[in-house]
Image (cartoon, rainbow, N blue to C red):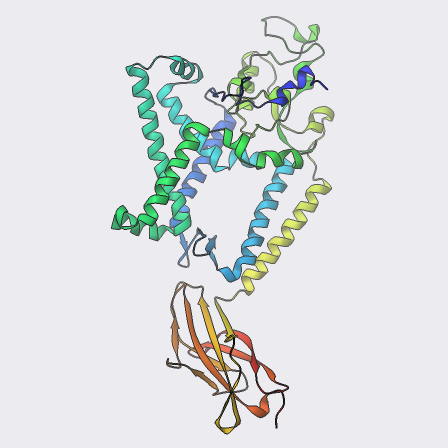
Length: 474
């Protein structure tokens, strides 16, 4: 079945031409109230992005995602491999949070918060406007032969892009290995830490490729969130929308003519100036409705409002609204679907908060040595050998650590060490110990023991072990 003429735009994307090749997008420099608000939000988020790896709360980096060492800090809370279930819950909360806002407000995350959009629109393209000029000048420069002017502008732009990509790569790496370690590696010299230098160069190349060439195709082709949009959005979702009822009228769009009564002639308010298309960073025509490429950046809203003001027509032809808002003039409502997502989000946040409150700063794992049975000792004592691993999640060393068995005092012996040891900050203390119990205290070959971990006289952790012995007492 052949696609109708007015729906053929859905058969392709704005960044691909009819031959299937890359169609370079030259968006007009945006301006207007939404753009000014986005600049404020973007620069606050950029400041946070570059500062977060170096902010510490109680000695913990504010955000850390050290995958190799399996160490994560989220908002200053350290998560170890043993806390992976909490990391998973945190990620689920993030996904549901984004889903909730997508159902309610479309791809507002993409247009206002996503680092890809912020860097591309508020950093790289602003530099491009400064060096090469607005849309028309960029198109002419691209078609221009490689003379001194073009070489100078392109080399300057590429060099600045490379420097910024290098800075972004450093910030990105600080999230992975830690801000302190990155600074120390820089002070020591790059060639002393090749394990840091090579990833840094790779990240720089990736960011340069993304922001100098791949650009909006990340949102259109690579990012799965755009595909999810079609599943999550419904007719009640608030998106950047074109009011087709007002814009088309009875006879459609028409170029503006001074002193002409458009309403009497049956034409809508859209004057078909194509400025909303020219300013779009993904090259789409918002008048065709909600599309995969639209990231809700509001550039078309600002541009259309400017045009409407110039021709003395009401603003808001393109605005934040829903399909039912345009068709039936209905205001935004908190739908049962949104209530369901909100309920799940609140429950998960409560579960995570409870886990964080109940989580101990010290975690002890004591296991009976594999392949080892019990051993008989003098005076009818039964001995088991155990390995222990005690994790310190704090930023301070824990001194004078020792084990005690609840209700059976004086039976714990540490092998080849003193009875006290130190757990290093954000580190692990490991070792081996024997537990000896009188044979008459063992019931049917086993007994559960509660082991308490003390720092000086303070109880810091409690765990249980299974003690093995003879199946019956003779």
